[in-house]
Amino acid sequence: VSGRGCLREDHPLALGFRWASHGVAKTNRVLAQCDLILAVGAKFSETGTTGYSLEFTGPLIQVDSSDGVLGKNYPAAVTLQMDARELFDQLLKNKEFIGRREDREILKIIEEQKADPGAPTDDVAGGIRFGVGERDYSPRKFFGVLRQVLPDDAIVVTDSGYNQFLTIENLTVLAPRTLIVPSDYQSMGYCIPSAIGAAAACPRKKVVAVVGDGGFAMSGFELLTAYRENLDLLLVVLNDGYFGFMKEMQEELFGATTGVVLANPDFEKLAESLHAHYHVVTGDLKDTLTECTQRQGPTLLEVKVIYPKKELVPLLRRRWKANLKQLAKEGRQRVDQARLLVR
Image (cartoon, rainbow, N blue to C red; front, side):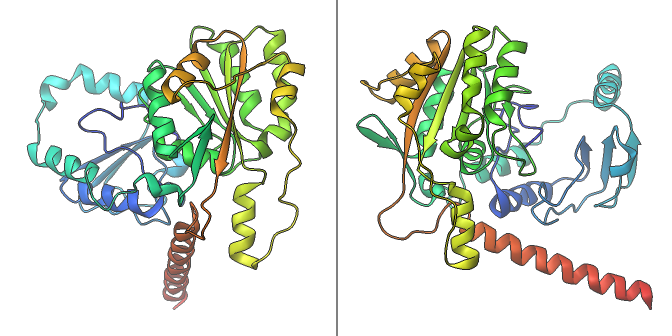
């Protein structure tokens, strides 16, 4: 997630992003065709590799500014401790010796993986819909239209929870440092202060903050800061009335919930009291998002999260179980390795 935007995700060589096991499987199919792998600034963490399920068939060259990650989780044929900018400056100076070879087979495989019929569809969110005005849309449709109306260099910031997963799975990232998320599952309340910081640091860029109603409860009054500093900021509040991610975890692990129901305010009245414009939806999705992104000053768009009436697999339930199984498998493997070392 941290490296998204280094390569435009609409580039022919960009595989795109998919959370958890499906994304790693697609990546492994591409890596299997490579005779050499260059990894720059990738520490190959448990989360980033989905339980260390990333597979390298060719030799690995790992480059990182931190010596502590080199060869730590995956064996590397060559390791280089250096800054990424310095590396690419040197590569570009010597590009005549490296050459450019267009591998049609790799391009074909990437295209096949992008069009993989087994890839997540609009049901990736387990049937969740976004209610915008009188209509509802899939998260993929919502973020697809948001991408259309935003400039390529617009900055999107998320909070922790479902809002983060839904954003990173469905938003195409087209420029470096334009998707800012609290990676490694950091605390709720991160989104709005970070978005305000981004808007202050980059006044010429549009900033969109995607936050759940629970995250908004943590730091929503910081909209007063955005108003005071006269910042352009679109705040998309995903309102489902719960600490949604924690609710799903509790139901899955314990079969019951506690402390996850929210007492939400009237967001329209609250926005008015915080000097933010509450956008009343009258048109279709594209018109709505265009109007919101073009408006000056703090703007709040309330999106109702609609769960399916019948029980469907929620966003992360299958993947949560799959990841737990993978972690258990990895743990058993490490125990076996330790026993061998002791012997």
